Length: 79
Image (cartoon, rainbow, N blue to C red):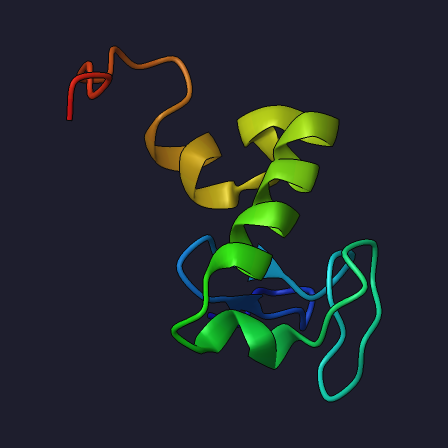
């Protein structure tokens, strides 16, 4: 998904290329190629997502900000 600032969000966790990865080469805060978030191996995706979450919480994800923040969400702890 391309955002208005020309960055792109990649993969299951929608990790954004503005700060966290670089297209075509390793880089960003997670030091990874953005394309690595598009394959079936998600361990590197989850490591980067946890790094993002530890720094910014869910506020780093625009989808959470627009669809979830301030709303009562279902309890999925037993899923």
